[in-house]
Image (cartoon, rainbow, N blue to C red; front, side, top):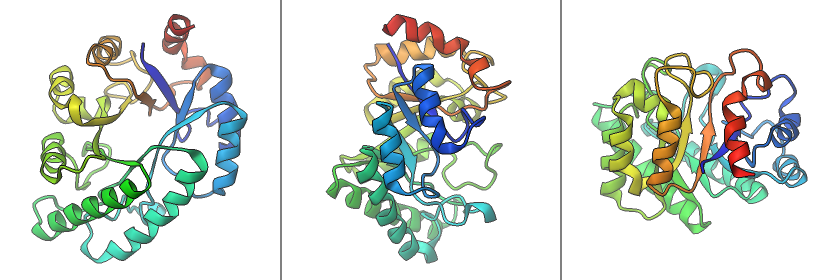
Length: 260
């Protein structure tokens, strides 16, 4: 049966961030993820995880100035030193939370620009090797241009080719079912083709990014396919609740009952 991680950046926003861990555990989640932990001390995050018996499934490396519209630094040639500093910051949170995988955002850059391509490849290779020293995986996530216009990594094939070419054992693909459906469609066949390199999965309905099962994708079929393919990681619930988090958890109740 699939295992789900509540995304605390988007879910349980009815309460302050540090209180969302308790809310997720009470709702039956065994893991959490979020975009960024950096507004809170690493010890505070770790304490919430331990207090509520939760696993930290994933979070992102520092993205630059998020409020100013930056969405990562990897493809920006003149930001490499800042990126390296950010990796060290993230590692302090990784040690406090016990997370085993981190996501590197690519940044806003033209994917056809040779300088951006070279910068991204260098940043990915360096970051994967640095995380490998700590026993951690690095994941890369293609993001659709409707949600994030101008984002460098906007193609699953490009990501897969880079991961295959670098051939680093801890470099994996972050496969968001939502982004894949919008970018390419044919999600099941891509799962089958790319499963050997998938390190984390996320989901949301298409097109409105609400609860699984409320859009055009048959999420239950995709979850069953992940089981059939042997995926044993968490599925991150990176969706915007339509009318309050708890009111929209009917889809999750079926999986809780099956796992009990």
